[in-house]
Structure formats: structure tokens, C-alpha cells
Length: 210
Image 1 (cartoon, rainbow, N blue to C red):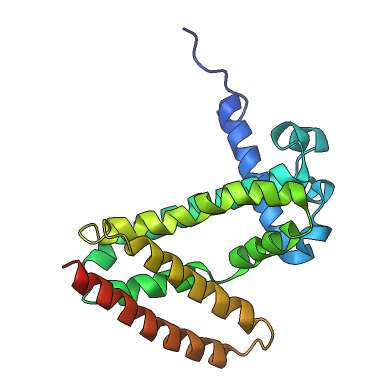
Image 2: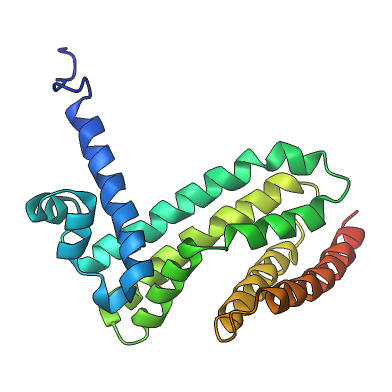
């Protein structure tokens, strides 16, 4: 069998294609943050990624394909980030508190803003809503799997999954509500309060499954 063909850069066609997909997905996130969903056009994404419209259509035929694939891309990056912290949290004297703080940090910045843009847009876009309904469980499952890896002896309890989702709802709710004021001090105070109550929730759950 012949070896994969390599271009002048030394990369195979598959490697170049994969790199192009990543550029398109990263450009999509940038556009969602800067222009919102309505202003994120496939032409704008292709221009920012430095690829032709034909190449963009080849990889992602529609705008909905492009933005929902970007959500999957974000989920994969979030999983890598969380799993890289696993050993540190296992050695922590407060793994639950540190894990909650990590969840908070993972939702900071433009990545979460881009995701919220898609949630809001899907309310009136049936095609996007169908795709987001399939993608959202994939996007959130990374945090569930991280929780199971961190606390495997408790992960089998029927309330464990609900507790993780409750923590995500608290984080997301606080962040979205904070956009109205943009007050960083108030934001941190609300998160401190939320984390304190989440620790009580997880403490009760862990005690019940010890």
C-alpha cells in the first residue's frame, strides 16, 4: 500500500483538511462572539478563516452545520481542558470546591457567549433548533464524564447526574444574568454564594453514597 501523499508543507491531504476544518470552526466562534448569530454569515467565516467559499461549503454545507459543528468543537476543547486538571483535583484537599471553580472558569469568556448566541437563535430557527437539540447533550456530557472520573465511587448514585446538571444550570444562570450589569464584583459575589450552596448539595450527596 502506498504512503499518504504529502504536499509542500509535509502534511498529508487529510491533515491539511483537518487543519482547515479547525480554522473554520475557530473563525465561526470568533464571528458569533463579535457579530452574533444573525451577523455570522458563511462568507464572513470563510474570509476570517482564510479559505474559499467552495472549501467552506465542502466541509459545512449550511450555516447550521457550521455553527453546530463549532459547538462540538468547543465541547472537545472543554473536555481536554478539564481532563488535564484531573490529577490536580484528585490530589486536592477540596476536590468538590475546586471542581466547581473549574466549571465556573470553563464557562468564562467568549466561548460561553458564542454558545448562548446559538441557544437564543434556535428559539426561532427550526433547523438550528433540531441540530442544537442533538448537539447540546454532547456538549454537556464532557462535564458529566469529568465528574464521574473525579468521583467514581459516587458516580453510580442516581442523583449524581442531576447534581452535576444543577451545578451547570447555576453557573450558566449567574453568567447570563450578569450581562445586564457587567459588574464583576457582583458577579463574583453571586458565584461565591452559588458555589457555597452547591457544596452543601454535593456534600449531602457524597455523604449518602460514602
